[in-house]
Image (cartoon, rainbow, N blue to C red; front, side, top):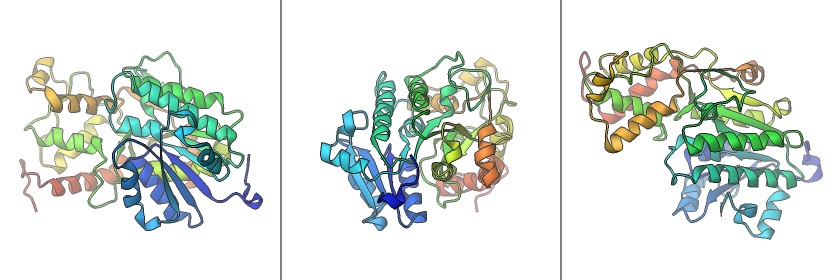
Length: 371
């Protein structure tokens, strides 16, 4: 492996895991900041207008982005032999986003029992492609802190199987897929990234809709006069979040960092704030009273939590990975040292929530008037 530009390999990157905001944002970033690069974006076939959607989003890069419909878990991605061999001869970098995209879009995105199969199957095919790609320089795997499952205490970047139990097929599938990548790390240049719950691009106005965490806080706090936090959530627990744009920047940077091969990197800030501080600030921005911690089960259950709204709230709390501390040794070594530390929540929370408030035209709450 290594730089093969002089041997005729073009600057071509394969992005897998679309459609979805992560794959699109990554593709857009590569095309915008690497003027000599072509991107081959693999999107699932039979998924409606996914290919047309990708072409529309990336229309201004026509000629440099190549959208290919495929089956990520199928042998050779379900492509013809000629198309597969053609890709093998071009690709130098591979970004496998399916795991993080699957987790971020919700654990119920496919029928129960299928998520593990999808995640493991797509990783199997990605690894097979990388083994056969003569010009490969780096495979970047986008995973989630959800691999920590129900572990308590500290979870380091080198940790994977520490006796934790998993609460969903998606969590287990992510962990198995990571183990598959680790097993190949002695022969393939692989860097694995783990993100926390994703928030959409924090500097865009209006913000992208792909932000279930901010949307979740906004809905929970705005819909009630006082939010009673579930009894199992303590206010002093650390809260980890990862901006989407930071995932993209870190992934592109680490795809060129040879020293990061074989390493796992946590994409979170080193000194995370507490749940109480963050939710309290969100409540302040939208003019609601601070959330109530230490609520009794009776108080918490006094508000109906059934149907779609109830499922959304439970999924929201489960995504926050509370009760854990995440190590950032490799993040400090490879990213912070290069000026790419994860943005602190305090640096973007208030303006992001304010944009959500204004965009949603939330009625004025106690102590606030709308502009």
